[in-house]
Length: 359
Image 1 (tube, helix red, strand yellow):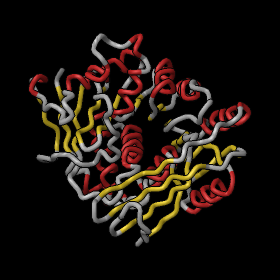
Image 2 (cartoon, one colour):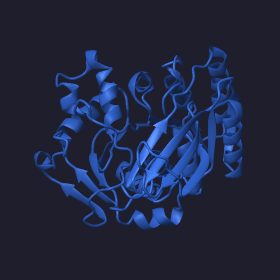
Image 3 (cartoon, rainbow, N blue to C red):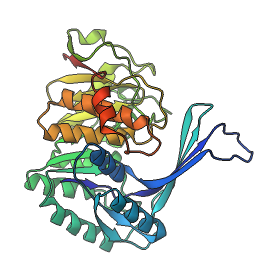
Image 4 (cartoon, helix red, strand yellow):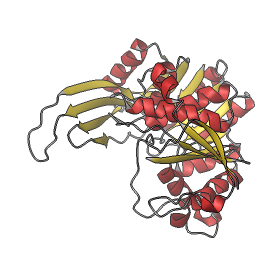
């Protein structure tokens, strides 16, 4: 099994409007309800890929009951801690005429220390039957910033693949455990290194990994795809600049800094722009197939799921990311996050492009 730890699950509602008009009454064409949150999305994507995920999380109230029922319907193993606060709800608003997807996110409620103690007991127990541990998302307000650090150390002691998709103090503290892989997106990388400014490199963070005010790009599934395969780029100085004005060399410096802090491998998704991956020696640039997205929410989590699946199969980081890009793209073709078709991934992976970059 693959243990998916996500302490901030959500009841997910997707509402599709032919044309959304602000400050008016709007009627949906389609409304879907399901389960989400980053850890849950990773688990659903793993299930779509034919794997056996195990979700460890907190659930509370009627929404928590509904989420539990939905995961069981999808035959996803669940180990949860019952808490008093109601599980949050997130709403995706799809405007078909404008081609936009807007995510309305309810923040999670604070939890007491007893809830975290029970969660850690569940993690320890379930690691015995797992091959990998994926830790995804934010920690509830007031929760222990070292939660992922503790879990990563337990996973290391058990000889498991450890993957962390987080940002800020939770990610920085976890780096002390030398996790197998960390996967922030570009905005999360900027936020993480900004919070670590006393030990950051001399270049300002906004120049290294992002610009002030940069808005998160949620779907990371559109890229330019010349042809399948891997090709080598001999001169790093000739790499394409980012449309935002941040060069790949600047982004690489931030990635290398995470490596120096303890991450063994780093994958940074970047919205519509190509993903960069680094294994401590080699950089890869991964571009995803060009598509017309239906709903890109959850594509990063689907990328993570396929990445873990392929690493467990023995693929190198570049090839595993190619499958990740294909899964992220397949996810963007569906309305509900993580619920794509494996056959779409197998078709799209042939169109994903890897470029090996020489430092």
